[in-house]
Image (tube, rainbow, N blue to C red; front, side):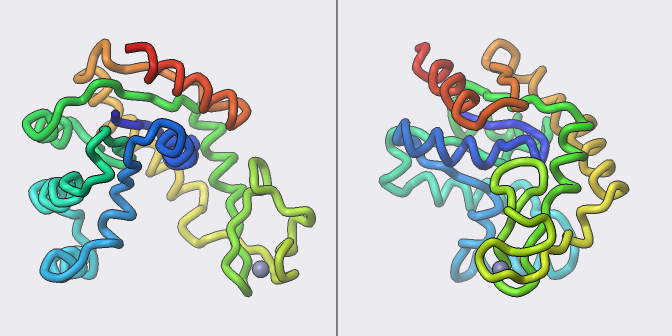
Length: 204
Ligand SMILES: [Zn+2]
């Protein structure tokens, strides 16, 4: 199963929740890259440090290694891959995609959520001023009372760029997957969204 959605759509949160309930393995490409070891880690670090994007063949190599693990036997949820049409086509040669869950949230809502993201300067705890987890005081950390600040790359211009990239590069994969795509309204309660996705996945 592939989960698709803008950063800020709640895609990662839902992927985690749904994985827990279904027994599918949650594979986030961010976690995969951070978790690479040995020679692969060296390759990943080299690419990241040079500021380039991870090449598709390296990404697929890491993914293929990950899906050999026993927890993937029942199936997997892919979160963060494929991000464009080329990757989707490459993935078709590697595995069979049964469903594509699109978590749909408007650009304005994503902008609002991303601008609401704050972290504690002291302990690093993450909050959102508009969605859960909301801090009791918008300026102070619930845990330690530290000052809450916004990340530098969560500014309107950078977020607009991320949204545009999603529309240009990622959305075309939805057309590629055709009737495998199920659109879920992401502007609702977390549990309602989860229920909808579970229903979709159990439907066949
Ligand atoms: Zn704190």
